[in-house]
Amino acid sequence: MDRTTLINTKLDINTVLNRFELKLSGGIAFVEFEQRGNTYFLLHTEVPESMTGKGVASILVQKVMNYLLKSEAKMKQFCPYIKAWLKRHPEYLEKFK
Image (cartoon, rainbow, N blue to C red; front, side, top):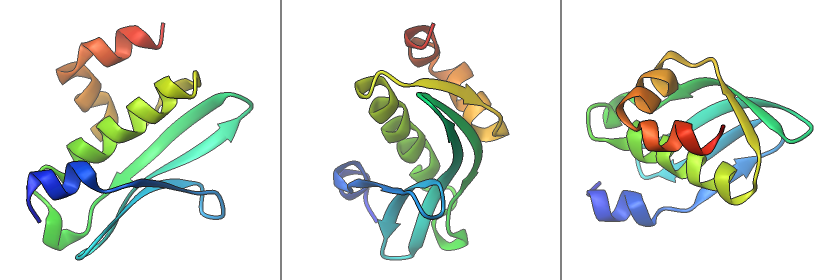
């Protein structure tokens, strides 16, 4: 799957499983969350094994951050991948303060 296709893939919110999802040809990439009021606790990021190392997780997390910002939601990150991603993209973390 190329980067343009990934960027254009719609972010779905699965309220039954409490996760943000990208439905891909190789499976579903997702970020698990708990929601309390307007705060999302981001717990775990997972990408299908066949898609690892292709930038899927990074695009997924960027889409989640954009969704949360657009929704004016608050966010707490517990997932190690998301913490590392935010260190590489501090401009997002600053927007949540």
